[in-house]
Amino acid sequence: MNISRVIAATVMIAFLGLWELLCRILAVPDFILPTPLQILHVAVVQAPVLLPHAAVTALEIILGIVLSLLIAVPLATVMFVHPSLEKALSPFMVVSQAIPVFALAPLLVIWLGYGIASKVLMAAIIIFFPITVSLLEGYKNCEQEYVVLFRLMGARFWETMRLLHWPWALPFFFAGLKVGVTVATIGAVIGEWVGAQQGLGYVMIQANARLSVDMVFAAILWLSVMGLSMWSFVGYLEKRIIHWR
Amino acid sequence: MAGPLNAAEKLTVMLDWFPNIDHLPLYVAREKGFFADEGMDVTILSPSATTDALKLAASNNVDLAVSYAPQAIMGASRGLPVKVVGRLVEHPLSVLLYLEGTGIVHPSDLNGRKIGYTVPGMMDILTDAFAQINGIKKYEPVNVGFAIVQSLVAGKVDAIMGPYKNYETVELKEKGYDAGYFELREWGIPDYDELIFICGEKTLKDKQALIRGFVRAVDRAIKDTRHHPEKALALYFNAVPDAPQGMETKAFAITLPLYASTQRHDVTRWQTFADFAYKYGLIEAKVDVVALLATMAAEK
Image (cartoon, rainbow over the protein chains, first blue to last red):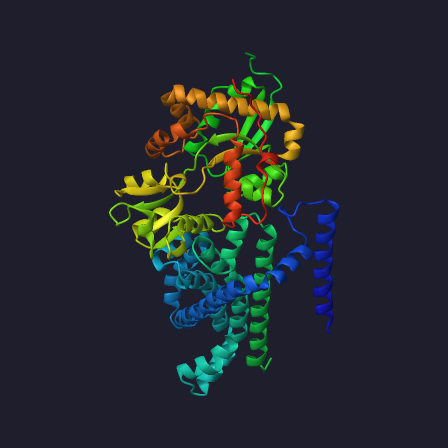
């Protein structure tokens, strides 16, 4: 076990311990803030209820990631190859992020229905931005000497893209993807808040209406586990793919 | 009658929702000085979610909260330390809403159709009870959230449980659609108070006289509203300038007869609803409503 893991674990335990302690000392009622142990208890006991919902949310997020990759990778590439397009499209991209997704959600649900499509799109709208921006920055970051070298060696355009710019941009791409997968849960959950029959967001709304705050937190706990797993998975992929680092 | 006191006691009330015509008596009481007559200065707050007010009252962070009878019963079954101290709207406003001309005249016509609901955890359970009671054997429940009018008009659902008969019917009419609805208490759901005032147990103990005065002022405002509805509405629009006046004027006509005619609680009616809530799974633990209700105003 390395030192950073020890630090992470210590901080986590200290934080949870303080939370548990303060709740008990100040006698905070559980409808305001349940203690970590209570939340853990509900998260485990209610796992048979929560996990099928978690699976739905996970599916929405994964499809959202796939969809955003299908948009972000070609978009960043085209914008890199044609800088004029970058100038033309950037305002639209910024606007897409400036609109609060919460305002967009009810509309998307009406347009795309109460099913999974509206949630996938919500997640994708949030994820595609960091991926596109990071990938584009990665392409641009390539040192000019290498570009000149490739040219001197007679590499064709797509060869330069594939063998130089793409590998060069990969660390940037993964950085963007990491940001993307961690915020993807926001899009999916907000989509579920405004119209869904399944998913952790739906559980949260339902539990809130029934005043079961412990269940709301249990859903958040599973959501965090999901976010953390996806983040670690992307980290693992990064290590496997960028083996030269 | 005593004039406004110099050292008026502060009292905060959190609404269940953004200010709307259902809360009109509160604004009348404030604007006409009924609260001041009781020696209090009332601040009205809006919540960010419908359960906020109840929770904040239970934790004594606000003095009073506007809540719903079903919500108060849910809170009581979870052991929240709250008391129902007053009444605002004495019958359900929530209905099962549908569009006229879609072949729905009786609840059984909803067999095999899509029924939307507004608040998961509450309206889905009421829908289920309504279906069981009225012989709707099969239906597809759909959570429509706040997109009530859009969902009905776009045909995503055939009916929706939970919209208010004084609001969504008017809103649909303005968009050119005729809305029909099934009144819950006419179709087997026990009658209940749509809007009530609740108070944290500690607040009630500490500020009993003040809460009593508040309930008296609300009662007075409701009676005054009945006598001078136009004046009351004008006062309300003055106090809530961004209210959609055209729509709320029509909503007011529907709401006027429903403001609480008395501040006395009907214990039997409350218990009937609490038992119903337990039977159909709205609450997991039985509730004895006597412990939940606190009568604050003597009948005149």
